Structures are given as structure tokens and as C-alpha cells.
Image (cartoon, rainbow, N blue to C red):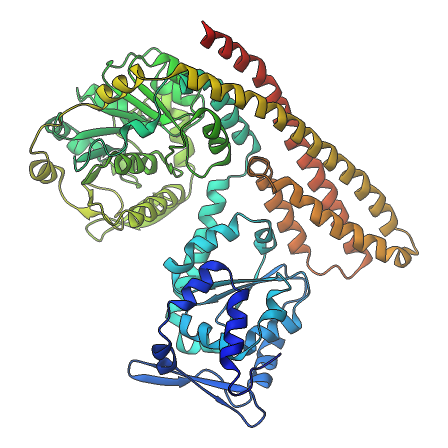
Length: 639
């Protein structure tokens, strides 16, 4: 540990500043220096180590004792660091605890430091040389409150280093527990809630990814021959939008939606369309997020919708949906999703929607994109209704046809949530996760008035509760100048087939490039399997100790090889589930300190490579099969 001497603090600060990532550097430079030293006081003890205290409002307290090194060593000795892939550390302890963690941890262990107090972090930069820590590339600084580091945390999750974090040690420094406990517990809850949400979004099913890829490629004609969602950007500024979900409470007030027509937008989520049509309410927009065959089977097969309803749904829906719909339509690209962004780059215009995990998430983002305000939720229960009902009585899910979906929902364990009146009502974890996802989206749109006009169901944080009749009376006061379907049809008439064709030609060429890349990765994974078999045999030899060096080098080589599968956004999209599963298994195995564990780690890596091989072979086949239909579409555009 290198400490700045008196009168060298500024020099140390400037050195450390250059080592920080740009967002951190900017954050530190925004701090008023006078305010910093009003809050943080630093003196040197008799051995020349800096000791800090902190002033906050009406309280002052010590950050370190006069023996900071001994305190940090004693604290760290009780933490089970051996074999851990990562440490989530809450509070730096003005540097001493952080340096002690690095002294005692293993070289491969990643430290994710959450330092809520940006003043303490900035002060630390003046007194300690952080270069020895930073140059290990095993430290991630997440500084400030949640809103401040949220984007950096997202970036961390979508990087290979995060694979080490599947089984982390959780440590709170004494100062974090003693003086900032409330702040750090809030961060801790957020972090693990967010991790749960990330895992939920990633999913665990490679087949689901392939279905999405297959559907997007199969829907290429609809993508190429229809306008982009950008044609609707802010076209309905300050028009009230009513998002109709299919909760059991919809039956209570669905009839009131008739008063919205022509004075607001009615956006139907997928399964709410049948109840709306049965009640003679024609939505302006039907939106869908699901990719399964049941979307078509339940809501499109043998059903004719009015020609002036617009279908705005993700481009990855079942390939039968778009051709069966006679009205205007726009296939939407999902924002920040690799397959969608890849296709959008060639046959789109860059416009996309952050769809989320639930159709109501997509509907909210659509309403915001269109410029609507206020945005009103109706039938958005996220909870069971009376007698355990799951949906509106008029929906497919309340009929024999929807029995399968209904039974899946009812098989889930009951959890309890608060309703708008403060009562506790039954729900399930899936709905709770969807609700949390919606609440996070609402929080990002604070400039919009979000109203929950659901007469029942769970309380939605961030939404103002009001009765639907009151909301309609207050906001539906003038007619909309034009309809959604009119805007889409007008833009479709201006569509340039020449431009779409040029994009499609480039896309087909890029598909061929990816076929070769996925085949190359498949060969790489097969080579990894063969090497693992050899290492397993060596590890089981009686004189296996003489092979220790080659075993260790091969293990590390494989860790580096795994990074090849996520270097590219598209290859990552298909490999990430396998990556997280097997890094978890390796992390749980812990420190490799016995011959048995050496054998076990190579068995895990063998299975790791085997599953990566399956993934990459299957994707290469899907892409190769797509080339001929796309070339046929290209010929069709020449006519």
C-alpha cells in the first residue's frame, strides 16, 4: 500500500484520476472541493497513515481507528474468500479494507466495490495509490447512489467478467454497517433484485432464442414491406392512451372504454383483444410480445379484425400472425437485444422499442414513443381475482381453449401483494416480477403522468390511482386529428423498395459470414472437448502432480477460450445462458486444491464445451436454412 505523504495529496489524486473510467472521472470532478473537505477530514497517525472522519448534517464520526491496518486485517480474516470468483464489497473503509481484500483474495477473484458515499471515494483518491489494484483488472467501482451507478452495473452484467459473479462473497465493511447501513441495504436489495430481473430476461432456454431468430427471419417480408415504428414517433403528443390488459378486474369497467373512442388511444395487449371486441370496443392498436405458436392459435386463427386496427408488435411473433392480419402493421425491433439489433442494422432504420418482458411493458413504451400523455392502465391486475380468476371472463384463457395457460398460472405458488387500498391479495411470483419490471419502466418516464385505473389487482408503484370514469372525463376532452392506421398507411405508400432491397442484399451476405463464424466456434468447442478428455486422464494419473503445470495452463486457456463465444453481440446472445450456468458450476466448486477437484473442473469444462458446440451448430444450421427463402424474397422484390 502506497500512501501519499503530506503535500503530495494533489499529485496522488491526479494520478488516480487518470486510472478511472470516464464516467467515474467525470463524477469525481463534479464534486465541489470545498464541500469535499468540509465533509471529510483527514489526519495522519504517528506511523504516517491517513485517518479520516466524516461530518454529515448534525453528526460526526470516525471512518478509521488509529490502527487501520490491524483493524482491516482482523476484519478480512473472518471472510471466506478462498475459491470465490467474486466479492461484492459494500463500502471501501477509506481504502484500508479494500487493500486488505486484495491482499488476501486469490488472483482470479473479482471485487465489485459499492461505495455509496462519493465524497469518501474522492477523498480516498488523494491519499492512496490505486494503481496496484486497478492494474489487476479485478476491480469494478460502482460509486454513488443507485441512479448514479445503474448504467455501469448494466454494462458489467453484459460483460464476461460478470460470469465470475455467479457465487459471490457478500461483505459489508464496519463503517458501512455502522454509519451507512440504510443506504447500503437499499443498494444491496437493488443489486440482487436487478440480478434476478437480468436472469429472468436472459432466460434459460436456447430453443426460445432459436424460435425468436426463426420467426424474425420468417417475418422478413413483413419487415421489408411495411413502415418502421419511427413513422409514429411523437405523432400523438399529449393524447391520452389507455393500455388495456386482460386482468380479472377488466370486467368491472371495460364498458367505460367506449367513451374513449376517437378522444384517446386504446392500446390492447394481446389477450385483451377478445374481451374488447366482444364488448364492441375497437382498439386503435393491438400489440404483442410473445413468440410462441399460441399467439396465433388463440388470437388470430379464423378471426377477422377490422381493417382500421393497427398491429404494432415485435417482429419475432409467430410467422402466421402478420399474413393473417388485414389491417396496417409494423413489425417492431426490440431495443438492446442482439438478434433484433443485428437485423435492424441492415433492414431497419435503427428505430426500436425497449419491450421488456411483458406485453404491458411493450405497450407502455409504445405509448411513450407515440408521445401520449397521460398513460392509463386498465385491467392491469398482476393478481388473482375473485374465486381465483386469472383473466377477464371473456378472454380465451377463461375458456376451454385457454385451459393449458390457465393451469400453468395456477400451478405457481401463491405470494401476496398489496392492493391500492392497502389490503393484501394473492398473486404469484411471475406476476410480481412483471409488476416490478413495469414499475422500473414507469420510474424512467417520470415526465409522463401514469395512471392506474384498474379497479382491483396489485398496487403499481409510480402510478397514480384513479377510477377509469374520472380519468376519461378529465382527459378525453377533444377528438384526435388522425388515426394510427392512417399514419401507417400514408407512410407505407412512401416506402422505398429500392432501399429495402439494398439492405436485404447486405443482410444476406452478413448471414453467410455468421454461418462461417458459428461453424468456427463449433470447431473450437469440439477441440475444447478433446483437450478436456486428455486433462481428465492426466488428472487421474497416480503421478498427476508432475502434470500440475500443464493442467493449470490448460484450465486458464479454456477460461480465455470461453470469451471467444461472447466477443460478438450475436454469438453472446446464443451462448450467454450456457456461459452463466457453467461459470456458476465452476465458481461453486471453489478453490481447486485437490486432485479430485482438478478432475471435476475439467469434467465441467467438457460439458461446457459440449453444450457450446450444440448451441453453435444449431445456430449455424438455422442461419444457413434462412438464406434460400431470403434470396427468394429478394427475387420477389425485383418483380
